[in-house]
Image 1 (tube, rainbow, N blue to C red):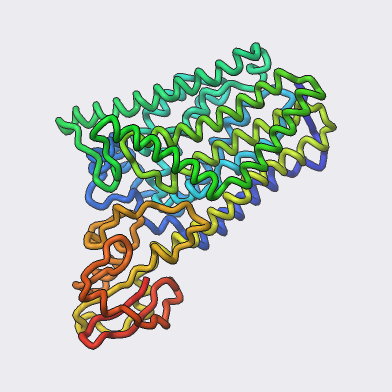
Image 2: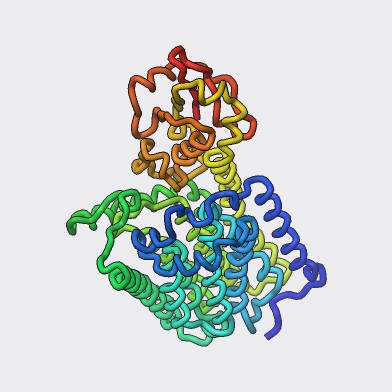
Length: 496
């Protein structure tokens, strides 16, 4: 069948889209350089992830990818995440009248620029291993939807990074022409069946990972305390965790995305309404509505799946919003095409919808990355900028932590910092700033470091030293680090 549109002015658009993609990547990389951070987030052993989190493929992929430059890994992650959306959309539209290169190259942008993916890329090699498998299975099923590919990919990606294993569900979604040939009820049941199969795949993935733990270690190690903030010890705990995650989900949506989601949903329903009542395109309506419902159920399920073990819903889980918005964009495109409008209207309307669901997440990604960099990197240089004297001449350092009060909460889904233990800063490998800042002090030769503020107030006697101190001189390389001089009893006073 012919493409829905082939105007000449759109011929250079794919090249322009890819050029823009490269420019945006280059800007983000130059400004915020996620590749500077820990490759996998582990320093003791990659087997620690296997024992604590049942990621049995982590040791294998770590040994194969640990030497890849972080910058290159970051770029590969972005390219393959975009490619995953591109391959799916190309298969979905293949041979239909909806197929056109302009949208094929444009819509996958919705998948990429999400705060969740940007934060996950703080560990670029870790993420690269998972996205590589997703992209590989997308290529293997590029011509036909495959439940088998979806199930196997879910099990394998789950064994590397559970957060991204949810995305394999797209591999099972049939193409547009296939859906057109189905009865309306069968379209609905097809998507429902995919969700049921996907849920079973997640359960199988968990069982396989636990079995691998038992075979290798001879026991089932529990989750570390910081990963299981709300452990399950009774059916009531399980119920409470599910309720808590549902509340978190609703708060997340209304706190950050609600105006944009409302506009997107209204746009889709206007198109669907016209398609139904004016054009009488009931089959196309059912397809578009099923895709939209599929995306919503996918998004909600990811949150609910994290509930049983009481796992903290980290900011990077919002990567699933990108996939949900991506499916919403496809649903809108299907609804617009059903209106039988002139070709020149379909493309601009679809691109406008893509911008609607991607610009705000893109901005949030930018703000989050800016915050992330100031929050977690370049500490050694910043401390040297404001250093007040030699470590040999001082008893130690007292740091007033203001991260909980001053971080950009309105631009960022709040993280639960209840698990942070400032007294363990020497060993922390997470985003926790006391952990990264603490290691910087040890690199510079400071043996005694006290953190004040946050969830744990620290040593009252030491923390009293920073009360009322003006912190006026701040580091240029990381303006969150400011010095308040030396106390009378020879402690360097800092604010972070």
